[in-house]
Image 1 (cartoon, rainbow, N blue to C red):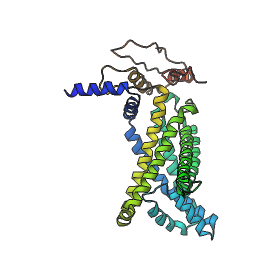
Image 2: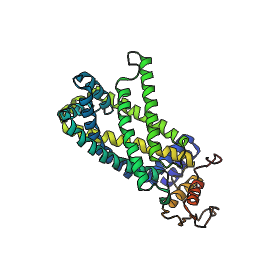
Image 3: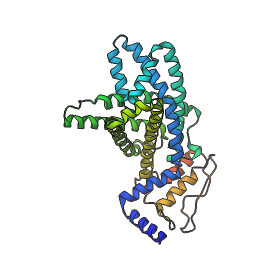
Image 4: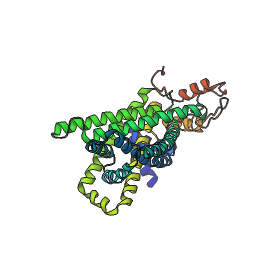
Length: 350
């Protein structure tokens, strides 16, 4: 009885574009150990946040000088990225303003260390999402360069997104102005997602393959901020004051975790669209063609050397003519990886 119900549900979701795509996203998230990647991203993000805020308030203290109202307005707009615990963060971070140059040095050192770890984690996560074979993953120097690029993007993104979410470009005096402000925030956040995914994703994935997930990520993050602001307005502000430090730490961890999960789902959406990995079966056998493509990508991901070749066959389907000869170099390995489905239905990327 239960198996019959599951297979009926499987049949329905495979025939529905929306349900089938949603199931495929969750299936690939599980195939890529998405939960573990999100947890690692959240930890690295938490380590990066406080040094970033320390650098921010120190620079504001030096640049703004006696114009404390200007510094406070910038602080409020940036910390609005954390609507549930932003006020508490503002009070605690402001206490660090007594240090100037020493605080800046310590903050920059901590930010470099934390953001480097975050970018390395992000590079690994994107390689897992796109099932990039080990032989094609970036080397040490490329990872260092991308780490500093991501560090610059992180600082710019926090400031820009904070300004937009805190005040908006057109204000919120009317419904139309508020809607325009939210739209501007979605566009800016989507652009930041696109830039971040471009830095962390292998260059063989073209820009246009990163756009759909970036838009979804921008919308989801803006909605998350709006939901957080609504929670604050309905009473969590007082709960945060009661629980003090626990509210700050737990609220910040939860907020970063949700952001990391949104980012992972955004990347998974891009990969699924590029490789055409839907519909997937939730009760195999039989496997769908998307199931076979996904399993081949996971297997080929384990290739570590230029001459290594991993082939996959299924008992319920004939072997595909994907070649058994070992590729002679990384260029051939790249062609094999792209042949796995990146150009599905596009006629090939140039």
